[in-house]
Length: 146
Image 1 (cartoon, rainbow, N blue to C red):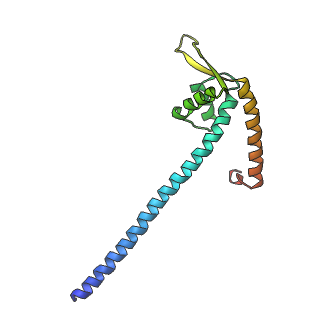
Image 2: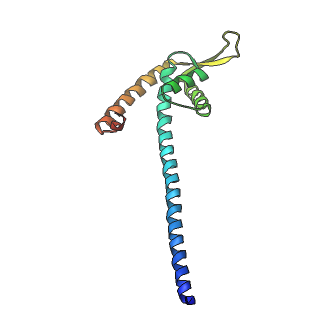
Image 3: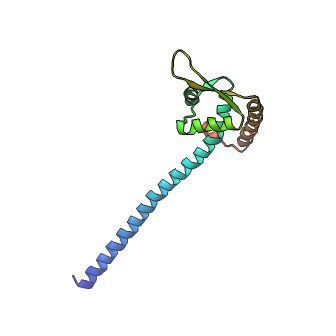
């Protein structure tokens, strides 16, 4: 076989290899970006819903860990790095009150309760939530859940 034919065959091989490699790299990278993109959007949705859920649960006195458990039982997993800053922010906004308490000779716990302003805000947010759900239902969003 002549050198030119060998070079042509090598060129064909390298071209096919490079194209296949590029396609595979793109597919893997695109898949990762797509997954990351969806996770970020889902995280944004959860953050908004989490505020409403925390306010609703704080109609009764809650401490951080008990609140985390109740949310998890309802299917809203949240880590401490998200929950505790949220509780402090809501307290800073005047929507929650808090007090340290010791029960049953255990270590002190900070208990949170919805404030009067928090009750008013929760009522308005719950109304907004109902309106959004109704609008989404009219757009057939969520039919995948049935």
